[in-house]
Length: 377
Image (cartoon, rainbow, N blue to C red):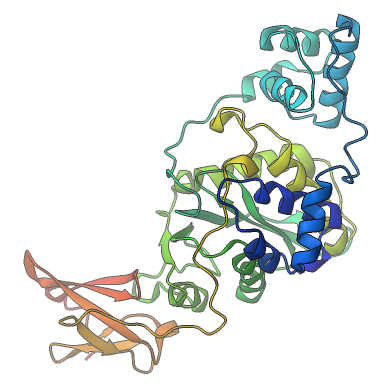
């Protein structure tokens, strides 16, 4: 779904949250969100008072009785059925409640009212991951399998920022195709800027498990934007562990037991879920902050015209010919069909004269070992 079809309140909420970040450039954010500066400053002056969901949030009061606190806990759990006691406590604190009971007491309230099953308790194991120190250093991208609909199939496309866990893309796609991914990424890049690196698995449309033809047309396009593209090892989904964890949250919080009518219906639900995930749901891996509090748009803007590769002087530069071949030391080697007509850099290994690494922009396309004789005669 195009960005301008997102819920208006969700759009305003995200804009205001980013405006509050240290060093935010209001004019730049107005451009990214495709609104006038007048509108942007008007939204900022009004703040969050017009957001539709503010009126139903509880406010702090020292006179509240334990019964009312318990009622608030159960109401929050009803709204967010897959949240545990830590998230619920932080959520209530973020919305004005004070003097809340401990996490263990909230857990007891949930157990006492049958809101937590033994199976759910066993499944709620913490995940521990390495995390990049700044937003936009790494984005993780993947499809969440496929989901049945009343008409057709749904393939949720997800992109997650490694540092903040901020969900950048949650798109309802009818297929796993380059055109759908590219359209979603263009909208994302125009709003949030470019990351330094994107990691994904080896499947279509961003990867190819064939060693001699490992870069797809989508991968070429991403590399031309100056984004390093890396792939997880086959059979090791933990490389994209944070996005995989987001898929678990998406399943438990929305997809499980849900049947969408069509892609438009799914996208409406996705937009609402994304809004809650980024702005309201405390994330245990980031000290129970919400993702939007740790995210900043990238200062690397999306170029509407793709740049041509520029390589350092002294490197071996070859133009990829028909069928994805380059000439090296009098022989032809297969690089990638998707690179036909593009220029690549070939870097010799300083410790082994038989080894070469082929780059396209900053992305490693493949490695060549002359001793293996994997050339095309």
